[in-house]
Image (cartoon, rainbow, N blue to C red; front, top):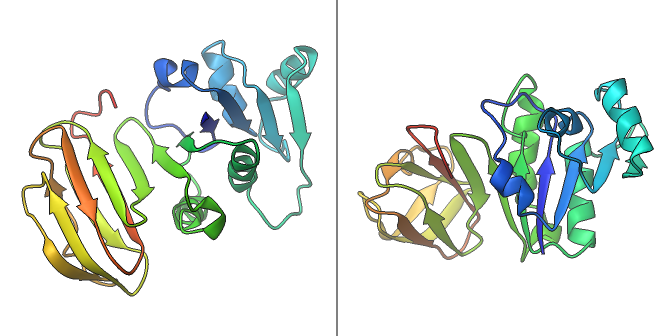
Amino acid sequence: MFAVIVAGAELSGPLDRELLSSADLLIAADSGADALSALSLTPHVLIGDLDSIAPLTRDALREAGVELIELQVSKDETDTEMALRLAVERGAGRITVLGGLGGPRLDHLLGLILLLTASWLDGVDVRLADDRHEVFSARGEALVVGRPGDLVSLLPLTPRVEGVRTEGLAYPLHGETLFQGATRGVSNELLGERARVIHDEGRLLIMRYRKDGKGR
């Protein structure tokens, strides 16, 4: 099952209506519902402490009978983490999170990126995306899909990531070790529309950057 979560960070560009329409499960995390409302789209579920959603949006979703999961303001998880947990509990094998990479909260951004290492997300393909970026964890092997010239960075989330091999990138790796605290894996480049990344021990973060900011 494919789930899309719309989080409440500032959006750097318009939401992808085609992507939203393809979701089997569409979840709004708090004020992410406002971005959906602007497109006249209705989520299947609204989850959050509802401290930032516009009251008119909240009331309209309640009147429409949308499933509402209201959380306590004082809690140990962010609204976006709870939305991810909900998607996994309901059987999502693929999840795209929109509205999670913008401002103004840098702590939320870093928290969400590090959340990709959570053990309960093992076996789930989670992508954080906006109009220019796609961020995800390789978990041993990953396919990077984009356009020729897209920038691809490989960033260790553990002290070292061993045996990194790549195909389809301008600067190939042939079993090297990437170290946390170094920038060797930054700013590689897609040669075509696909690249493959494989690694051994460690956890690797992949970031793809679209230079033109258009399309997926």
